[in-house]
Length: 233
Image 1 (cartoon, rainbow, N blue to C red):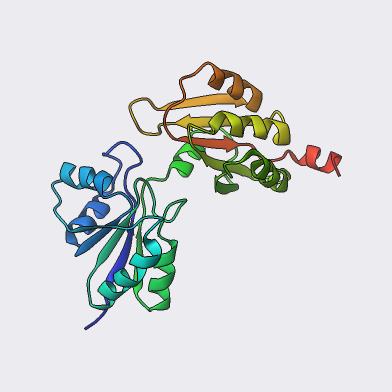
Image 2: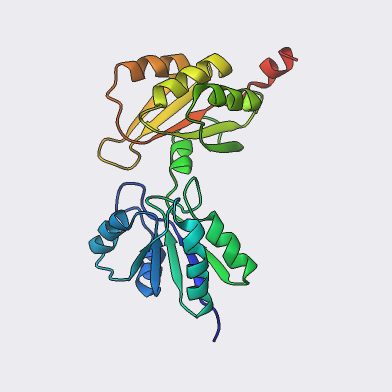
């Protein structure tokens, strides 16, 4: 019996219409869906009247679950991996099973779609030809500043994810380390209350101070200006 295929399926980051026809077909055809959040995935599947077995696959069980899923793939089952929202493995679980599948000579097929980092970058008004995705910054200020210092000289546009609980502290640390760079903060992308806050980091900090902090945030910051980088050396 030949092994099955592991599909890495991107799902909407908010608006349920932001899913490809191919993704819907794959989800309807696979034998099993491994989901970071089975409740969120059930909402998507029910919306499109797709009925498939679900199994949880998230940060705290992926080490144990990976072996079982690889066994199912080797037994010939086709499996779709989905995260809570967006593209699996991008600041979400999935790296472990993808690496294990490749090591086991199992076919891995990406089914591309929504990604908050790319959506925010496309509407940022900042340079898009070269960029660096940093994911979530460390939760503690000291480690956060240390990481920011390491990438302060990066000339590419920087992209970060941040939670509503730390967004203001993170922006404050960015101001201290990166200075008055241009940036944009995107909140609740593709959802009803989608919002983009444009300006320099200090301007954004002031606007956030007057805003109701809710939802997940994507922060896009311009890279280090070449002249400033050379002047500091």
